[in-house]
Each structure stands twice: as structure tokens, then as C-alpha cells.
Image 1 (tube, one colour):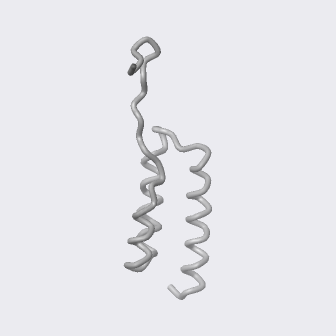
Image 2: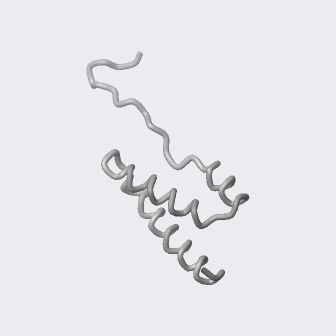
Length: 70
């Protein structure tokens, strides 16, 4: 794969990644993780390190309405 093809493919993958910004849920988290893995395969070592430092989401507990944490 030449440089231009790699750039084009990365742009497409990053565009897909941006779509998860508004609709990431427990149902599609596996698809999100797969996309991240696909992107990592296209990056060199330094780019992988930087990409892996990004916190895309954090899981938070779901609180029951009558069992408040305070």
C-alpha cells in the first residue's frame, strides 16, 4: 500500500470513528473496538503510542433511581 492509499484509508476510518461520537452505546462498543484495532494496524509504532493514549470513553456505573450513591 502506498502512502496516498494509506492516507485515504485512514481518513475513511477516522470518519467512521467520528460517527461514534454521537451514538456510542453498549450495543455497538464491540464495533467501536474493532474499528480502533483496524486503525492501529495502519499506524507506525510512534503513531500507535499516541493513538493508544487517547481515552475515547469511560464506563460509568448505572445507578438505580432509588439507590443513590450518597
